[in-house]
Picture 1 (cartoon, rainbow, N blue to C red):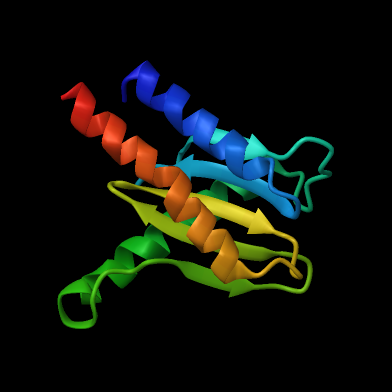
Picture 2 (cartoon, rainbow, N blue to C red; picture 1 turned 90 degrees about the horizontal axis):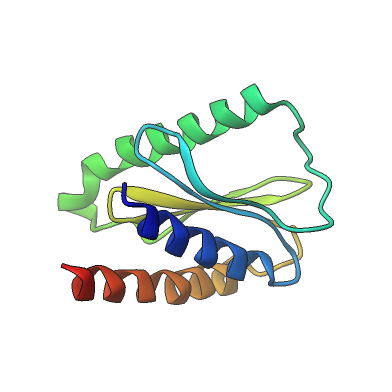
Length: 131
């Protein structure tokens, strides 16, 4: 991946992290590796074990990949939301990658998804312009 693409992804994730109630925003590749983003400032991670975080990234990438098997019959996935007691985990497909967001449970996931789609839209425009 080109360094300017990673920079744009980092910027997008940082913008998402500025939203009150967003704990974490990152771009994860289809192999489950974080390529950009991270925790919002002043957030204490709920999971501090780096290996467990990497396992989570691989799990959501695999889950999304398996769910895409039904795209032809059911349509493309816009987002997947996992409601947990302490956080909502939101997975948003973006080309060959995904945006993974952790938000406070009281934050409306539909609004988060809408904001994420809007923040990812300029990346698509930049890719068209740069090619």
